[in-house]
Length: 572
Ligand code: AMP
Image (cartoon, rainbow, N blue to C red; front, side, top):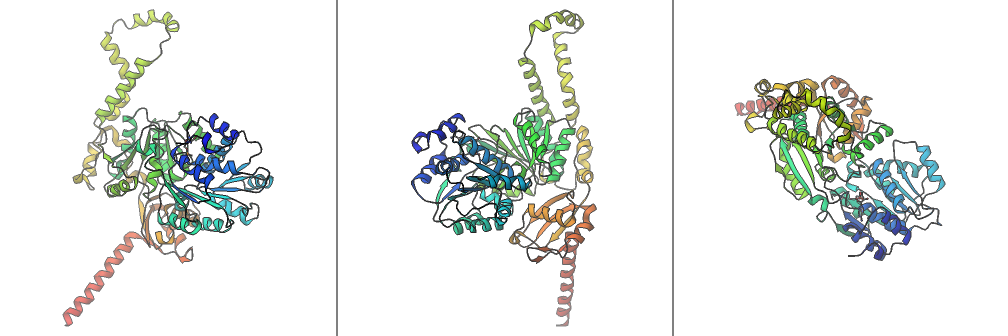
């Protein structure tokens, strides 16, 4: 195994990584760095975040930069602004002792003028999101005709986010003679297409299995009714009093809703999603990093750039629409040799997706029962006792008060004092979980029995996030599907754009090959129908209809046909 010293990195670069505490190269660095230096090969790396892939491409790129040459020499494309900023920061840290090396992050949603000024000053390396990058190339502010290296980082994620056209347009503008590196956690067809079209017999490196992170992650699922998701989430948080985790939601609205409820219920949580300003996001992330925040409720997109090593739990509030994304989510825990737990809260429909995910992650899920109120109370009690045992007692400060305290408590026995003390903090749990129902979904309780269950609901009933609470939803049919490049992000974007309303809550999205279904709050039904119908989606005219009505019409049509054939049979 080569050390960083033996890899041919210059002393100033070695000094930078030494200061970061990197002792030995990670597996992907072991593989990529020598190929980079010793051959001209393109490289495909199947690797998740947490494997050290930024340094795997970053260190040799920095090493090969000609500081005298003021043109852009390397372009790194990544799916989100957070990741671009992270990559830039990492590269700047690695090259701290290399004077004059410039790295500029370029991403959408921020002032383009500032970025134009930064580019005009000259930079050796750009880390960019594809949309903004293409914009700046077209404006002739960014010149990529002299680049020697292109990196496509988290290629699957860039494609999931609908950047296919931008990637094609950018890659077509790069010089023929260059090296291309592609990193992806998974290898769906679209990523393979990019590799085939733009790379020259690449060397393939797979570090997924050796990735200690993935090995250290336990995958667990709890099966509950869809309406009990939030209650299950609370129980998961309560049975893990020291949780430090990310709760993944599908939409911005859901993220807000779940975070708001958690905050209202006294949990140490906050939301991270695309509707927040950069300053708000930074503030949430700062609190999460410093552990002042225990639970971060986030959308997949917002969470992409999160670079925190000791996350204990990843919770899938529901499964991602694209199952590949589960790998990204669970890869947020079990990093840097620590163990982690990835939890999925699933209903009976989603349960069928578990075997597919097991194939993707090459690991089995454990089915656990949602903890009962009694189990949670026991756990919380131990936490309290633990805290009491470990509290630092400042003898000197407390001594002058002890006489009075002892006198005041004289009438209580030791046992009674303990009971009083425990009840002080513990009553809220006892109250809340008194008569709490079993949340585990059983085959016989699927659908239709909510009335009975509600009666047993006790203290938990008030917080049930059922359909009535969140308002009714309308299910729409749309004639655009995966084949047309549709993904949940596009679909939500389309609804936002055509209705000119970003606050429409979108429920379940069900993408098929050539059409899709999605749910929208009922109060926006007519607006959505009117705004989307007959609009254009990449050259196709959008047809949208209410799913139930469409189904009913189909059935009606079938019935009519049946009548005709019956008539024909009758004639014969
Ligand atoms: P990445 O996969 O690039 O996001 O890196 C994951 C984490 O591993 C980051 O916090 C890096 O700073 C850290 N890291 C990368 N390479 C090494 C190394 N050779 N030794 C120790 N930590 C590393």
